[in-house]
Image (cartoon, rainbow, N blue to C red):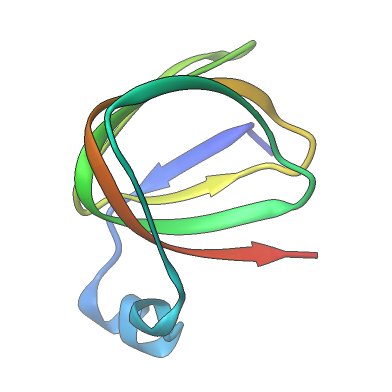
Length: 90
């Protein structure tokens, strides 16, 4: 599996996965290192992010559904304040 998977979900996918009931995380424009202990699924409500990985850079924007692989080491650059629903998968 790729380190980062980005897709545009349908409203049906969001509803059936109860994505809009997941907790919300918000963060202002910033840059930081991150490591994923578990796989994370998230749906971006607002913002613009560049995630740098060993595989390459990923641009993430409003409306994107993103899966981050367990064990991923990356650098987040938040270009516009982020608001996202998220869920960690064991």
